Image 1 (tube, helix red, strand yellow):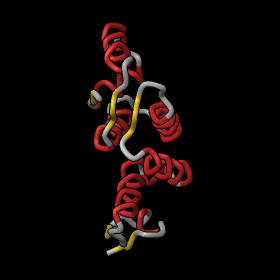
Image 2 (cartoon, one colour; image 1 turned 135 degrees about the vertical axis):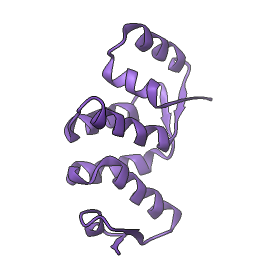
Image 3 (tube, helix red, strand yellow; image 1 turned 90 degrees about the horizontal axis):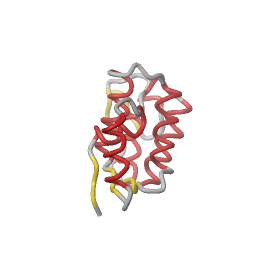
Image 4 (cartoon, helix red, strand yellow; image 1 turned 180 degrees about the vertical axis):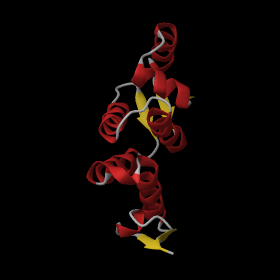
Length: 126
């Protein structure tokens, strides 16, 4: 299966360049794989570059998670991270995703200096 990078995901969400959106849609039409790294980067780009709020980022991730042509790496981890992010948007999606990846891998606690992240089960403030 083909894979896509962050820029393709951002085009699919933001739809700000007609030619690139068409190229992205044509590329994924036969199916495409999305790594957790590309998804985390896309969330960061949506916030940092496009000034999207937590609610918009959550909606975008959900759209990508449920997209008929995309297969996300460990979709159950993404879905759980998305739930955590929606419950505590100040954490950021990447932190929620990192915690859920560590949980699935059996590598808890996740050490952090982030006070908010440390409040989640499975994280430990250093």
